[in-house]
Image 1 (spheres, helix red, strand yellow):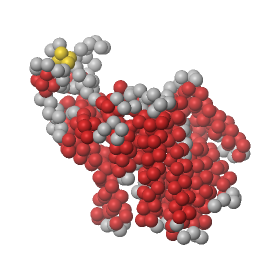
Image 2 (image 1 turned 45 degrees about the vertical axis):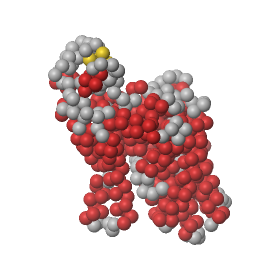
Image 3 (image 1 turned 30 degrees about the vertical axis):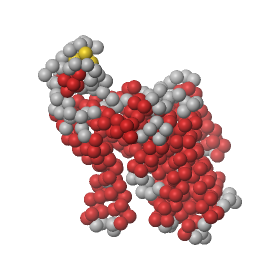
Image 4 (image 1 turned 120 degrees about the vertical axis):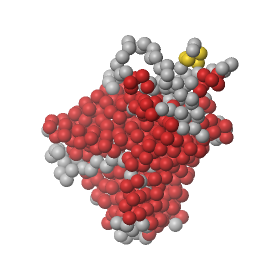
Length: 509
């Protein structure tokens, strides 16, 4: 994912291989049991699971706390900031009516059967320059609204979107994992990019619309209303804004704050009784729904900035002024911050919001994602304890002496480290380092396919030690079991189908 949590030079424990394996299994089992059976909040379950893992592995209490805290800090510093900034864009998009306009355009022009394919295509397109977490943050509001408006199962439209993002994240530059693999193996970037896109197309189809249609029968996911980016009509003068009938147009123009923080909350914080109605008279603003293209451009602005940075890395020499500028503006945090600032004007002020109302919407978009941020951060801490205890190194060392073909060895090593640590990037980097000597004996297409095989393995079976697992679980309102049936199986399908494509190209080349 976005944050790379590197293992220390030396593990925090001198435990034997068997003890480390038992520790990893018990730690993961503790998380699953606490959440699924004990109904413990995932944030607490991940903390306790990390403690179980560390204690069984023989890691000292202080080292466990330090390792877990470091993982939490790294994850919040990377993924957390992106989620928060993306949520602000989503809040303005929803409250201004911009999201409604985008969804209406999609629903009007794409039939129900074509929606899953459309979502997969859009996700794959914007997934080229996007980190997985950024893509999820930007796409989930659209996915939820499409499912709500059309009545199509959330899994039918959500799984294709996740598949498009995940496949591009693991197989295609400029994502960090593929770029590191290409560098470590000295593979040809252009050839790897071309072959990666060739493999990505059938992989997205199988893991996206095909699997989404099947899993929707077994995972009846319910749209999480708290995260649904739509404005709930609020009574004004005894009627609902936007209701049909005489005067409906006038009432729609008087829409103020929806369910987010009100201007009165900012001016008079803490006043009034809990649950009492707020007097928002005088804050009414003429609501003008943003036009379709300004809304689309605003959402795509972070994508374009990050894509320009990727193009600069490929086309411009280092230390040139243009390259330095693109490196800065294309950083995910900077790109999303720019998106928020632009959204304030194209969505907020354009819709007729005052400055205080824009601030209210931005602030009101954060409380709903607080739980998600904590769970994702705890997932990063759990992963770091796994890495620091030496579990990832154990898997890597066990595979070094195996007598396997380079492609299969690279895939298996990446699979083992991915399952053990939860990090696709760590799995890619470690696996590429292990098989790098073998790349010297292969031709250019073979080295490119080796990099792709490692990328496929790095996506295998995301589970409770992966921050992305919890991101998907919370955003789609799933249980742990449902997330495993849908998201974990989706990642496994991507890994296996993608690797089958690598083997097929190897035979045909």
